[in-house]
Length: 212
Image (tube, rainbow, N blue to C red; front, side, top):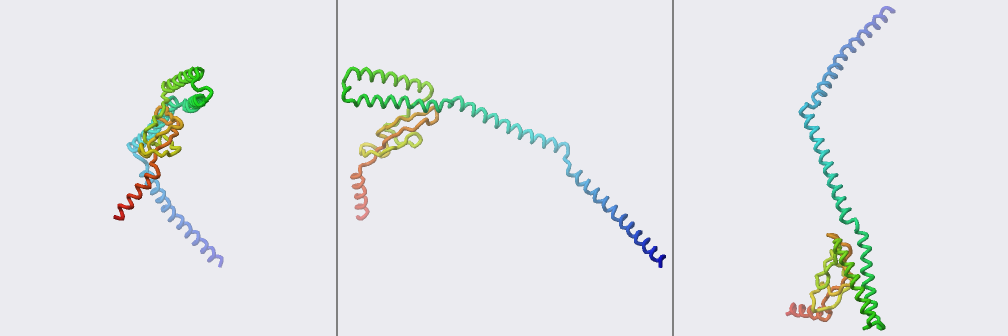
């Protein structure tokens, strides 16, 4: 009985050894196949050079884009660096014009020599300010008798006027200015519109022509 058990154990051990030996070549074959695949995936020297050239080209392109952005920002800072200051300086002109209007409408000062001399000084200072603005590319926007342009004008009111085309600027409430090619502030304006009576008559005429 013991002899039979020993023989059975030997047979089992032999079977295990045979299985291990049979699996080893398979594992070695798999490893060999993996290495071959990896070798196939590895780039050739020419492909590696092309890949490096592509990476370099992308890096140079990015550097060039950054340089252009920097140059543009530098130019804008140089050209429009005084934008905020120029915008604030416009209040000087506004105050001058308001002061002038107040003096001109003062009944006590009307036709007096003092008023004439004061207004003359106001005009000189005003012209000097405009001249300084022009030298720094800060220019007034032409508005009167022009068609309303939303890029430069802001309509504050409509005024009935049959002598002008609708949308024509017939009153300037506040002057607008540009600095180089940028809007500093829009002109505040009043635009012409047709009188209501005339508009009503035109609509009535259209209705009559339709019924006929």
